[in-house]
Amino acid sequence: MRGKHCTRPPEGLREFFGIYSVAPQMFALFERLPRVARSDASVLIRGETGTGKELVAHAVHSLSARGKGSFQAINCATLTAELLASELFGHVRGAFTGAIRDRPGLFRQAHHGSIFLDEIAEMPLEIQARLLRVLQERNFVPLGGTDSVDVDVRVISATHRSLREESRLHRFREDLMYRVRVVPLFLPPLAERTGDVEALMWHFIDQFAAQGQRRIERVERAVLDALLAYPWPGNVRELRNAVEYACAIGEGPDYVEGDLTPELRGEPPPRVISPEPSTSGGPAAEGEAAERARIVEALRRTGGRKGEAAQLLGVDRSTLWRKLRELKIR
Ligand SMILES: Nc1ncnc2c1ncn2[C@@H]1O[C@H](COP(=O)(O)OP(=O)(O)OP(=O)(O)O)[C@@H](O)[C@H]1O
Ligand SMILES: [Mg+2]
Image 1 (cartoon, rainbow, N blue to C red):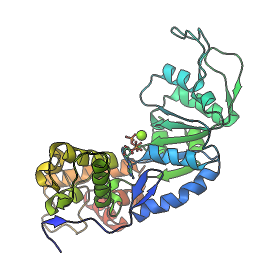
Image 2 (cartoon, rainbow, N blue to C red; image 1 turned 30 degrees about the vertical axis):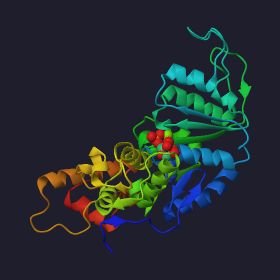
Image 3 (tube, protein in one colour; image 1 turned 180 degrees about the vertical axis):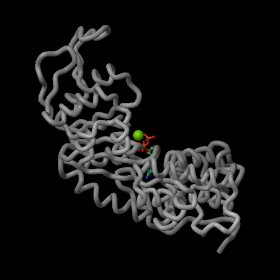
Image 4 (cartoon, rainbow, N blue to C red; image 1 turned 60 degrees about the vertical axis):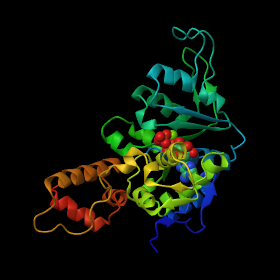
């Protein structure tokens, strides 16, 4: 049935602590989270930007016995080493220029709660050493202080990188990696979540309508095709923005091609490598370079694990093996 417009997909959208999905991969995660939350084990959430890492971190905290305690979040990529240390571990007055009064630090504020270390791969090495000590000894000394402070904090971290790869490159301490990654959770990219592009498009359409914005009732087939073909590097956040863009610039009940963002109207490189064996002439040099770049990037992101890289590329393992041979990637 390929009419000009498409109607809503069948029911089946589930919500879990603000995370919406129709995809079996995500349902499996929803089922795992309550069990993960039960323990105090450190959790590492891995996923590309906009995949919902912060939502998952919140869910783990809320589901845990610490749910009523405090949840303190910090982005490790945005502060200098000194500021990050003082944010995390606090300082006493006079510890450094500008430290005009005592500051408790997030670890103390998160006592009996959880701390969320976002972009943990970017944490400077000297702070990694301090964090390791806190995780091992469950206490720390604030900057410029003399007395150690005991804390009971659950650590939840997130990263878009492979910590194993970062540790191989000596940018992340291996001992700390094992401490923060007791329970690893992987958030698949939006493009790999079966059915989610369409379902979440409708979800965001409804959300904006409920907020009194444009009320979209029908979606042109060409629009849906464009959304389904797009690789979504910004994942769910980017999809939400695309729908918000349509609500802001378009009007009327029909979501038409003119309401698409420039990226969606352009022709981005496909994220999926072709599953058919290449024909005699081989792919055009340009296509080959793009394909090579995508494969190398997938291997980098998965720390060289071919099974995971194949998943990321949306092909099966044997296809990836063949491509690696053809393109002489090692
Ligand atoms: N499955 C989902 N359903 C509904 N909204 C979602 C979903 N996943 C993410 N979002 C929304 O997308 C935005 C990005 O999510 P979030 O901040 O959790 O992603 P992130 O992985 O932490 O991204 P970044 O790495 O850029 O910090 C938020 O507005 C969030 O509410
Ligand atoms: Mg985030």
